[in-house]
Length: 305
Image (cartoon, rainbow, N blue to C red; front, side):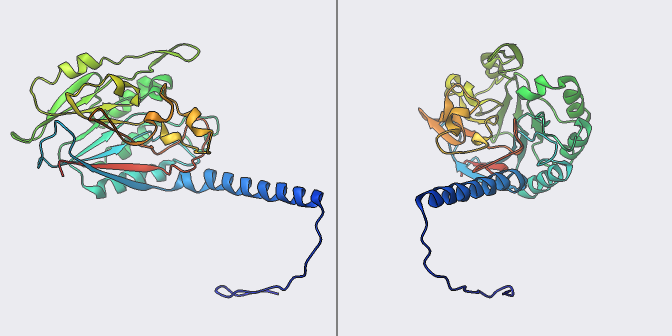
């Protein structure tokens, strides 16, 4: 019997005696089907989606009424199957539609997992970033995967499209009376020196010392772990790196977050001792081209609202 779309067909059934063994095997089969469906969704659907996550806040140290909007793009990991060039183009198109005062790129620009199906070279994704528009400019920092996989080519590609890379540096943005410092931290995991041991190129005190006036500071840091050292002088820290856990299987994902603090800094708006940080779930994938419970996102922040 067939049924047209929009109609429901009921098939009468009779009670059937099921043995314990059949019940267990049937349950295992159903569990297998659910697992397969979940894996299919995590591989083929969620990683190819795109959402915009918005935050509105006036953190301590940020003047009330000093309204600024920031679009944050984190962890693009450009490359198929889930972040091919067409998806990168979509990210840029959506970011421009948000019309924020400032756009920031939070590092990790290339896909490096073993399942890459479409190579997107640095010149290609950088050419898309060149289309980003924001009155106060577009600025970038570098992430650990940038350092580990072709740092010279990545630097050159970003430089060639005239996007400043902030490494332990700060720039003063805005007009008199509404200025703020944008500070960018060097990567904290830049050099591998052993198993789970890294040497960073980050200099938090030196970076903040670049802010020569008492205007508020927005700090860009690829990895959120530095937040434990960030002083009250910083109004807001923006970070990525964790992918929000990327594959949120209950009871497992918390232990897989790439942070010394587990799930503490995994995702979202984090407030500790009146200090504020927003961690983006990012866009691409690492290790496996899968996402579950953390769809690719662009973050938009409204400050001073």
